[in-house]
Image (cartoon, rainbow, N blue to C red):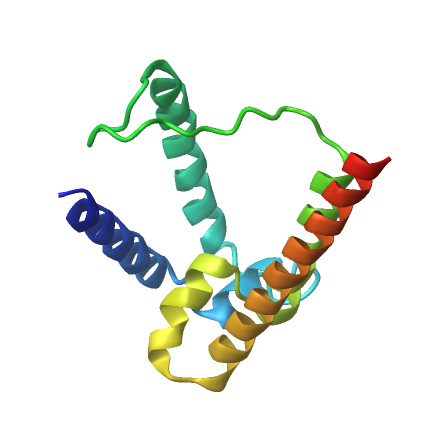
Length: 144
């Protein structure tokens, strides 16, 4: 039941990305082009997501388990530190250069085009690099 509901939620999310236009890099880049031909349509998508999040997260914090009984694993960090800022900048730069972020990139893999696959491979490489650097950082903290 858990796997089936996760699959349905993932399919629904992917369908929402397609319907909203977030899986189309031209729409995303048009939204980010404030000095050119700005496309404000994704602002409505983001606004809707913020409204849902503003309602859902306070409710989720009151629960100890998900609707299917899995433990709730909500973020606990509140600090804005160097790692958060640098990660946000890297994410934003990748989004602005390619027009993809991870969710829409995965949905776009089904189109068979080369660009989403290149982004996906670059994303995997970046995640791998992060893991390597994180292990080095942890080892240095532990040693010193």
